[in-house]
Image 1 (cartoon, rainbow, N blue to C red):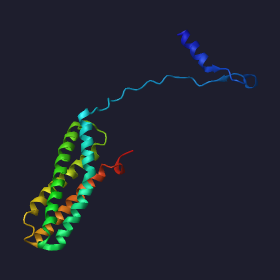
Image 2: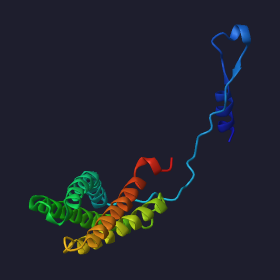
Image 3: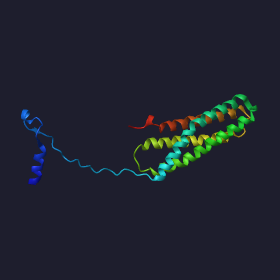
Image 4: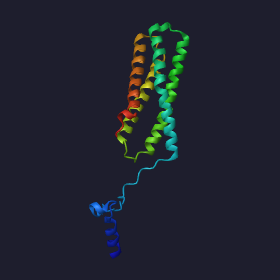
Length: 185
């Protein structure tokens, strides 16, 4: 105990370079900082980060696919039932691309959501994103089902178009939710 007091006293009193003018200087005591025990941080697996990377790269393809699909779909919608066969084929291919993208991102996203279910960090935002994207999934399935035979009636084409655009809006909202724009500091 006496040695601790001597060490403390020695650390408190330090000679100033110009001690002849001002006398001895008293330094701040140096108290060691002890880390308080905290909840252990949630650890994700390496596979989680691989899935996040694939999921993120897939999401980068989403908006260009939407723009292309809107452009081709609008050309078909404007030309009526007698649209060009090439545009119809491209519209189907783009729709299939959106379907594959959303199927893979849904599987990867749901898997990561499940793995991170106990991580409280940003939980509400992640769950809201998942709900919006699954709603968009359902909308895209409905769009595909409504696409069969849309040349027959104008009302069927309008419904197909409205559900597709609505699904794209919901998906874009879910995508924006995960950007830094909505991230808590």
